[in-house]
Image 1 (cartoon, rainbow, N blue to C red):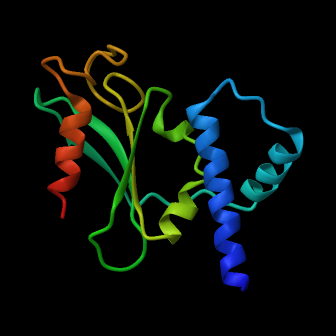
Image 2: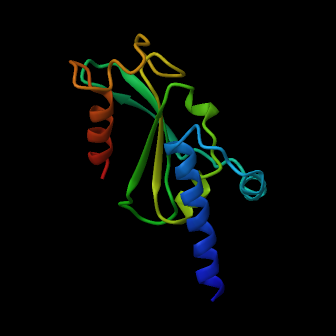
Image 3: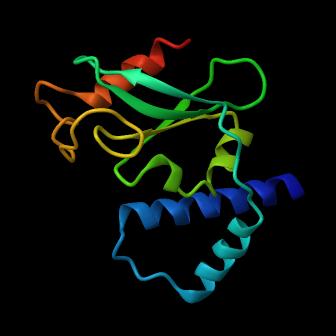
Length: 144
């Protein structure tokens, strides 16, 4: 019974966080903010398994922090690409992912943070000549 309640609590927090990301203008009730805030206070910063410089198709390398759960892989991977710097990424949800068997890769986009290249803000993520998101996913799948 306690195990089911714990899963329900984690599932509720997951849904709440998804709503925050999908609907940034959504007004959050103050009570919900306090509940999530108290939950997140207890989570400490996780150690980085390693930082990889991931090569793109034009040989520019993007800095990527890789977090691996305990045990032997392969694991499903959550990829986060950020323009705000991977060191500024809120790591409160990472522990939950790692404890549930997910690997996590947090990457600085081109020209931002510790990554190489010229900052073009989202212009190298789509269907153009440079496709950094695609190249990163290809790199991740080749790590198994």
